Image (tube, rainbow, N blue to C red; front, side, top):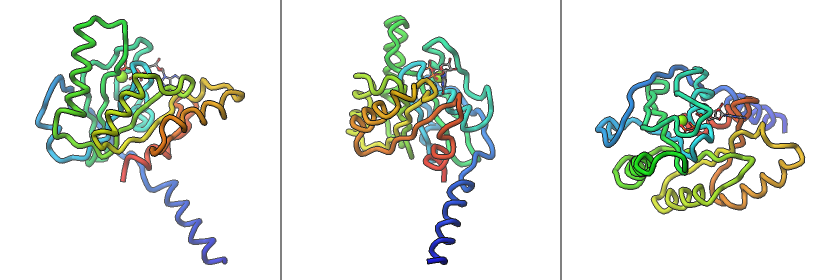
Length: 207
Ligand code: GTP
Ligand code: MG
């Protein structure tokens, strides 16, 4: 009916404009445990393989170009970087896992930092955004991370990133492949390059 129609429209308009990043501020770089992570402010964590675009996603969402440091070389982020969004939510930028070219000691330190943040602490994440490269799909290390997050009861969103790299002809096949390996989790297709998925991700992580 007419009234149902306009009700749906109002909901859609709200979906489009409701969640917004109004302010974004770098707070702190953390090398190990820090009591700030237990202060009760909700955390949205961004995790994924090195160079998959975690820090760039944070810059894209906040529309602040150099808020989080990025690099074309894997291994840019080596500590936990904390950003305060809208005065009420932390975005947590983590180092990437699975980068073979770091030294053994550096890799071990990063693995320990990620594990202690997610799995050996009482820190809670409101959402964990597991970022993968859409053109590659989930690697074995991505699957290991997903399983570990699931075992610890984390609320995981899959962000299939860099979809600008996907050829049209590969798109459907890749989407199906990613869906099949992430059953039970929402998937957002995203690109900082072509500005796809920004509204969806903002709505999924902020409220
Ligand atoms: P680490 O901190 O080393 O773990 O990397 P990261 O996951 O934070 O990646 P970062 O944001 O530093 O980006 C890595 C590279 O990917 C940079 O060269 C970015 O320009 C590039 N990149 C990020 N997002 C996109 C995207 O949507 N499309 C394409 N084609 N490249 C992207
Ligand atoms: Mg980074």
